[in-house]
Length: 230
Image: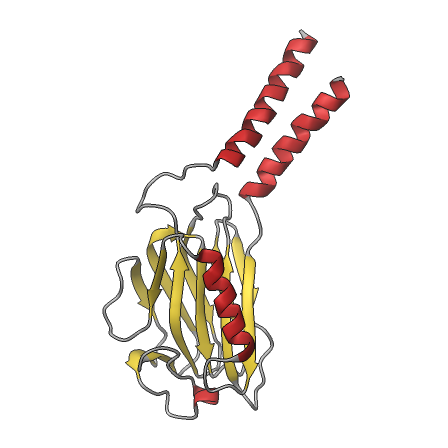
């Protein structure tokens, strides 16, 4: 009976630890040579939207320089600007607007960092004209780096890249305050940025009932073992 109880305690605490530090779930699709939203990129975008629906979703389409309340700043490299109607070449190789008429045009490569006023647990966007290897990086609070699907230098195309990540916080709120898009040496467009958070600004994270139940089982088991030894 003692061994069975110990097993239950350990299982509950391991499950709780795993639940609160889950790895990022990636939603990615690359449409080879595409100069419009279609194919695998569109499929990945739809799957991401379905995953975050109803969880404090925000979006930004770069139709003006005014930022939404959730975003503190967009730190672009030199040579990047928005709103832009074109990056100076074909949509598949130089990027384009995936919604509306404007997008964020990154002409000199480098990186773009989105800094948020509220903690988020999900981020996604369309990245167009992608020809070189690229990544999204962030802290959850552990450092994370997500690689894009391998692109074609000659054909370019459209990529959707997104993720959900509860990190070290109890669901449904993450700890992410910034996301950086790294596009070294490429000319690309960024558009249709979206994110999700169930937190109020600066508010506490409230564990879900399932998390509390696991914690209660673990604590109760520890107490029972202590009483048995006494």
